[in-house]
Image (tube, rainbow, N blue to C red; front, side):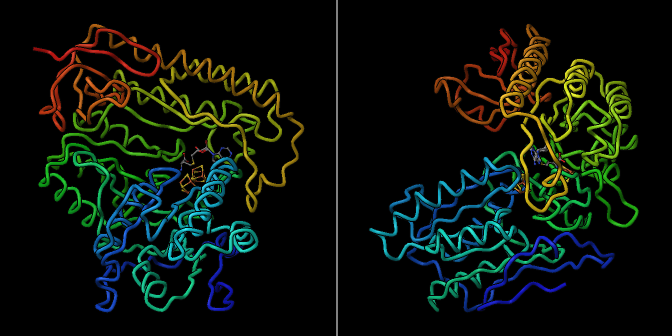
Length: 476
Ligand code: SAH
Ligand code: SF4
Ligand code: F3S
């Protein structure tokens, strides 16, 4: 199905986005056109990123493109010639925040008449967003989606040279574009996309519509990227995908990829997100075999009730989930497990909810992102009837968080008086005299040390565990 074409605008259609075909993924290579070069000379931009790691990674590409076109990044809204919001649509609160930002930012146009305001990421992939932007925020000059970041140079040319407005969102399935420049957020830790999109269609989730069909990068491209990162001194990679376990390049699956990456010289490997149904024994075995694959896994369970899991279309049961947890603990002793949980999904009874609480205890999670169900237009659950009151939903979330926080503290406590390896990130946000970094189990540690340690993996003795972090001393 083609996108609708209207007044030079290409608009999203969730209906088109829902379609999946067996068409082969197309692979292409990103290139700038000569006439686009230098468009940003003398101009500044400010990029704000919301949402998950997929957006963080996309923002690194957007920054890469803008810098290559000679734009200069600024932190000052008042100075910026271009303010671009890379948005998230996963819950209503995320969208409200972005609309709030737009409302605020557009007032800057009163004093800076040349300011260009743009929105990209997951929100523009929804018709409802486009309708709201058109009706309430006509001041927006640039709108594009998740499938056409590679067209950004040409959009900027249309805006800055031809003085056009651009609205172009594709709802087609999406290809794989290699070779986009990236300006990375960190000097020692890197996001590496391994697959895009999602074909799971959990009934509550907008992501399969905003990110298109599941498609994997070629293994050579991923390995080349990681080898280049090793050469540049990077210490950690996080492999990214909405369902990394669905990765495949022909018969070469995620376990194979993980093993090939473990055999490079990268000191630390993490990956997110894993779908419990697709997490296979091969992957678990590889995790247990290599020391540079970190002993932490984020494995979203969403609910502990089989009835709710079924309505969510998660395609596993509580029992299957817990079996995988057992296998993980068998192969990776001491592994730290974290999760995502949604409460108050339509039809969730008190008994269903209690099953979630009991699963949290059984699985021994050491942290979780917890959410109240949020209705997303276009998803099946949008139409599900719910008689759970808001107060009740909040109460469920509150009690769940209490349980999760106990697990968080317990997970941290097990490292008291132990020596752990910490990859030093920077000085701590909270206490500028202290360095901070993450352990292999993904625990935040603050300790005294000097600047020269930033970027290194050091041994730290843990002196005290708190719910959200560990305190330690550098081992002499
Ligand atoms: N692909 C990942 C992440 C998806 S979005 C995964 O499958 O785990 C991150 C989390 O947001 C999800 O795990 C889920 O817990 C939550 N989420 C997604 N849609 C939601 C909705 N409509 N309401 C509330 N939480 C939602
Ligand atoms: Fe959403 Fe489910 Fe896909 Fe995760 S696996 S992105 S929750 S549809
Ligand atoms: Fe949000 Fe899009 Fe990620 S909806 S969670 S930014 S894939």
